[in-house]
Image (cartoon, rainbow, N blue to C red):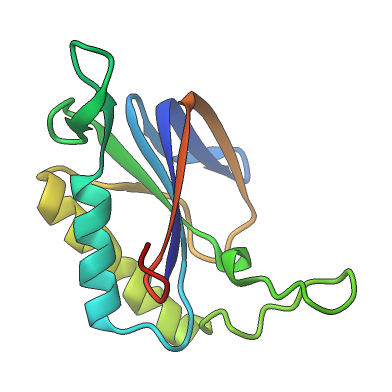
Length: 150
């Protein structure tokens, strides 16, 4: 499982002209799911996202978490995070989980994150052509891969 976490002052997702999710301060999380992912990967990643301390404290240091700033999450499914680019110029996506596995895991991540931050997680629509708007704050962008825990 891979996540790109962007600290934002605002973000939204629009599908066919309709806003499906929007937040003020918080995280825009792009989530990629692969066939090898397990519930253990999901639980670990959700804890990391919810506990990430990348908001500034009164001294300008990154010490505050999402809950400390009453922030929100906009979670977007993003199979392209598993693009294989080694050969040629056209990426392949064979590592990305198929919808029959990815959709239940994506829905489980929504539920898990909502529980951890005690508020609803905003979303896009799985598999849709989504338009994402964001104002990255910092910019602060963190990538996490559950198979390469750094």
